[in-house]
Image 1 (cartoon, helix red, strand yellow):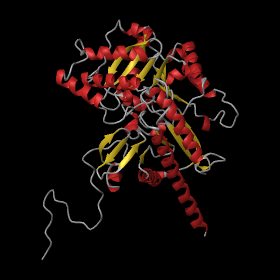
Image 2 (image 1 turned 60 degrees about the horizontal axis):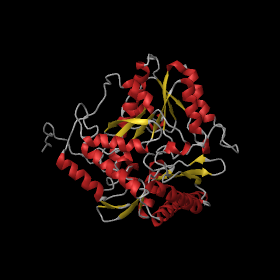
Image 3 (image 1 turned 180 degrees about the vertical axis):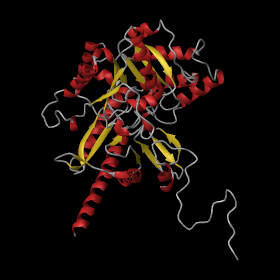
Image 4 (image 1 turned 45 degrees about the horizontal axis):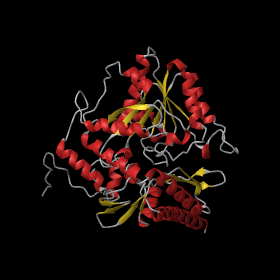
Amino acid sequence: MTASRPRAGQRPATTTKSEPSPPAVWYQGQVQAALVRRGGPLRLVRGEGTHVWDAAGRRYLDGRSGLWAVLVGYGRSEIVDAVAAQLRTLSFAPLTDAASPLVETLAERLRAVLPGDLRSIVPVPTGSEAVDTALKFVRLYHSAGGAGRRRVIISREYSAHGSTYAGSSLSDPDRGLLRGMGTRLAGIRFVGAPYRYRCPHCARLDACTLACADEVEQAIVAAGADHVAAVFAEPVPGPGGVLVPPPDYWPRLRAICDRHGVLLVADEVVTGFGRTGRWFACDHWGVVPDLMILGKGMTGGYQTLAAVALRDRVAERLARRLVPHGFTYSGHPAACAAALACLRIIEDEGLVERAAALGGRLLDGLGSRLGGCPLAGEVRGIGLMAAVELVSDRADRTPLSLGARGVDRLERELRRRGVLAFADNPVIVAPPLTITDQDADELAEAVAGAVGALAARRTRSRAGSQS
């Protein structure tokens, strides 16, 4: 008897092991098939304070604030009630020739904490869209002033400016955000970041030379100053490794931009609203950028909202023109209600000052616990954002290559200790601003324990290979 052929559309039987089907939900930053093989994502079902619980009932201290956003913790009834009340009253209002009064109230509230004359607020739904908006505005600013040739944008290595095409183009090319999609937007040039531990200019010197800032001026001159529109920079690159600049870097950057008529754009999506122990990271150095990009922590993760803040001279020039810009959910009433409630909590509970104090405790705890670990090359941080850079050799600072398996192993070690952190090299922690002394110590202990376990495994592996 002959075997029947499969009907049209029917797959023939096979004995080979097939690849897992892609998940129903496309998860960000993941190889989908690999995520399925690992058993899927960590399914979080509840959050309270600084902790989250998974579907199996396991509790974790959230050392990554969700994704840098959960500044005031989970389960804040003040924010939930404000959002619910607004949705019952007015669930939507377009930010065109009609708007909810809350968006103006929020703008006034932001003006009270923003540095200098950053007084005009452009609301958008997300930080990535804010980056895209800032890029449009800086080019339009020069065009409106008769300098339409100014199109070049200077960005930096280790940068992370979002996932729109514009944001991906401005982000460090090594992040691979446009891999397989095409080239980045035209006119974007990259310079080095203020990365003291690996600075090609002064890593081995006793003091910083600020040559990394001078690279920005050299790039402006090389492109032709009359062709450069703006410098985009995170005051402290967070996802790029918590690269804390030397004290004179941002004042030097401000002076360079002023000297050449170039706008300075500070991307504070990650660092804003108290994360670094000041309202905004730029406040550490007394620098007022021409545009400031805001997002993430503005609503504490309860709603999607971001913004671009403009200095007076930028806003005044653009106010005379019709700017072709906007998104359906810009300035959503419920998002504005969440932001106002979140900002009230930050101020009433002194969370900016708390971030400075608890950040010092966290950094000291990491440093003391990892002082003798052979894999810990540098521990650095500012406020409640800290990083542990891993090396295979502390003497020559050779970066430790973790690979996918190493990252998974590190993630498991952290979770086994009841902590969520950004598991990679460097290991990054950025907990909510509401953490306690005990939380800070627990984070430091868990990260040090996970890195120590990695070092022990590496030692055993080497011993086994030599026997």
